[in-house]
Length: 335
Ligand SMILES: [Zn+2]
Image (spheres, helix red, strand yellow):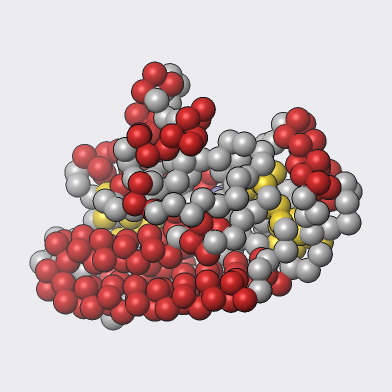
């Protein structure tokens, strides 16, 4: 499936198929990890080229394993743009070589990206209304999560990924991050391909404005019609909640989509009853059976949302469609 997908995008991507890499002034061959990143890069490259997508939409990046054909695609890329090791640990080894060669861009490492620590509590606190500027890389900014911090002494077994491991990697669901990354991607591509620098930068500016306009509209929609109390499948929506001032009551799985313990499931059942949860959100990449262990605690509706947009066609329109789809899915679920 993944291989077929890669071959398919290779055909669409005429630049990577048809042009020898030794030629001068070629459009960079760009490989992206997930569909949301693919869409942001496709918007920046519009009119110039098309990036490839590594992880097909039916696969959870948390559980992704690299196939030989995909390893080859990485090796042949001029630039790999990905979220970072915190999302898809299986990619970090393959990408380490590229990073040494300066052919890698991890979006979680773009300066000024709004980063949130992973939530380990079963019960989510209501969204904090503090200013976003202190969510950066500095350890001091996360005092209120002191039990789960990424202290240096905790990193046995995590090696150099300890830092990524403490950050919730689903940062593309914050539209401010997307807008920031569009510009950073354009600057990276402009440096690699100066002939098309103006197009990249202009595309990024236009795309960022579109994202900001959409975010304003979604924020207004949620303000006018607050969503029902809801529980999500894996803790992937923290950035979306933060951006739009809404809050899930909890998540069945942690942000790495690991299987929940029996104790965690039991706690979620309690939350469903105590908080009057009306909606449970399943995700297409994961077994829905686990939801029934929660759903029989109280009368709830079950709907599907997907932080990876598995049902949305990939390409330039994907990213805004993903934000709109999540907003519609969350507010449209009626208990
Ligand atoms: Zn996830």
